[in-house]
Image (cartoon, rainbow, N blue to C red; front, side, top):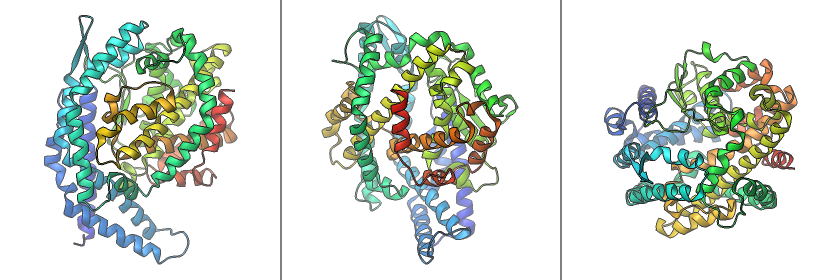
Length: 514
């Protein structure tokens, strides 16, 4: 089956309509405005784009375009290279959508049940999505443990459905001709996940001592005890960083975002295409998120301010996504406005989020005294190191999980991988919840690497107070203007880096925790 140009352009318009409706539904559900997640209705209207004949036709077009590229020597510019890249992004999206279509009823049921679920602890009924927030705000370890136990019981209750989902995805990957799900994800994205895993194994080894020596005293200062027997609910309390609350009140989080963007020459109030939703609703998800509904014309930035540093990190991160989508050139092809290498948008989000690592930002925007800013800077660097190590462990775990015939065998390996990397015990019940489809952990890891390289270049050009320089904002606008056209490696080339390199990230972590 060969697809005509007209059919291909129609498909692209259908993909855009699907993405728009899906993200609007996601926004309404997770912002607490709509209890049900109507995934089935969206698939009824647009599911034909994921049909297997359509998928195979796009794959044929992609293979043809890539064969044409192989006839050239060196780098290819212009329509020939551009069409191959667009088709690669389109095929990857359709492939993941095809798989999602196979599990849509399970996803709809699981998401709806999560939104409606509540747990009862100490005589109080708490919405399931609010339990982790409650744990972070609970100083008593025994009470946190009871909250964690109730949360894990709710997770365990739905693990049979998650196991069914996992098996359905893996059967679909084999049905499409791939050796396994891991191979499907790697080949469709053009990523060497095994090589990335090897790089991260070395990263874990190189930062073992730094992590252990940095975490132990902070842990003791917060919990009054050593790391032996450390549990995930203890970690929730640690990263809550309540000792810094006075500098991160809930009522100032949106103002801090406005001031930060203003320093870069961006007036958020004038960006009518970015809608900031701060309204409190009972079933609103506690974590901030960005939902692009029309790129770049309608972008939602959702947050439920609760106070504490995490609020500020989260809204800065999601604002990075919102600015990237909101400042994308509206004339870019659909694939470059909606799709692309997701590591790139995550790197842009981290570039703003990691302002909490900048002592100058903490003193200038937040108003911290210099001594407190230094302390928080070190704390935030420790959290960054923890997160990279945690995601490295997740990727290594997922590589094994997705090459296995029996996921249940990996249940205890999940906890073992996370314990080795973080020194924290994670409940094995999370072995199917603490992962995202299509190895999204790899996107975060590549983003951490790219963001460190980007930050190194920004500081070189604009100094340590780059966040207060309009020229730095203009520099970021130029990159955001591309939308999703550039891969992580191409962004690295734009900032004069030879590919993705872990060294700047390691150097920044070591300097921050020295």
